[in-house]
Image: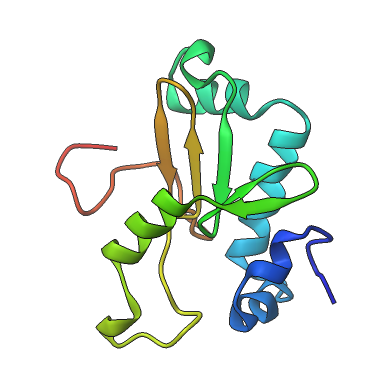
Length: 134
């Protein structure tokens, strides 16, 4: 069963595929939101408004979810991103396969990189790892 009706589902660990079926899944909510904006050609304009950026700073955005670049009908792994995410947190830190942490969404344009962590019942605000920064 492919709960996302998208090829990226087959690339995800089994644990993530099962979690997506949950009615409280942050992963599915994140995918539905960002993939929906991408398909509607509104990802750049929506993020520009929310983040206070100029739309041109997010022109031709590339969407990455679960470390995979997402296209309308396919997904692929970008080796450089995979290498970076693997170096940030690898399975040797005691986490089981499928428990790897990655940003909720990554948006990459020619001039901007937006890294978004999506959590249920949270709001836009300061990152707790950095003082006085969003």
